[in-house]
Amino acid sequence: MPQLSWEYLTWPEIAGLRDGILVFASGSIEQHGPRLPVATDTLTSQGFVGLLQASMPQRKLIAAPPITYTYAKLNSAYPGTINLNGATLLGMTRDILADVFRQGFRNVLFVNGHMESVAFIMEGAELALDECRREHPDGSPGKVVFANWWEFVPDRLIDEVFGSKWPGWEAEHAALTETSLMLYLRPELVREAPVGPSDYDRFPYRVLPWPERSRPASGCYADPAGASAEIGRRLAEAVVAGLRRVVETEFS
Image 1 (cartoon, rainbow, N blue to C red):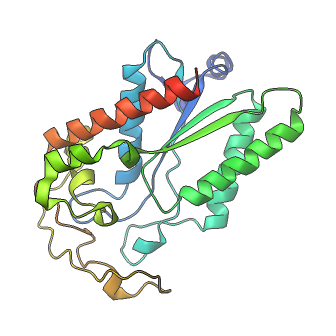
Image 2: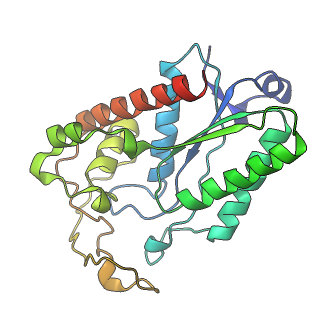
């Protein structure tokens, strides 16, 4: 089966795919340091969706238009970051899913690449499912599965590829994993630019507005030195293997 992308299909073609799995890549438009484009989270998730489709040609996986504008308030101080408010993202997700449920789609998978928007997207999905249940009390209520790509990367692989350079997931923004994945998935978009300092203060609470000391001047929350396309390939293979298990388990 050829890879299917919603925006390139005609309406009669889409009508014939309602028994398939609609796969949304979700990301953000936010700064990713001086080397990576602001769409890194979205592009990475889209890359995983394409690899998943290619690895499961027997399954009817339809790539939906990505959820690109989301919630990235932590990086609002950097030019290039574009935010939705949480309520707007929640409502947008609800509207999108309610409309695909209205059209007869029942199986939805999110491949997510951005942490800050998780709660809003999941709540929007919950509201859309509630609406679907009310409108179709005797039919299938629909199913939404939400998968963060980094949760499919085993600790042993992180130890193997990064060793002592690993800063921890809390510092993995525009750093080792994202740079490696972009070098593998979209190398033409990775710049050769000096990164500069990645220092910032970490503290176990939140202050609003976000204080300057809580963000690095470079926009990279750890040094990406040591990232490579080969590491990106190994990370991507682990993620896609995990996503395959999700499809086989949840959409049997």
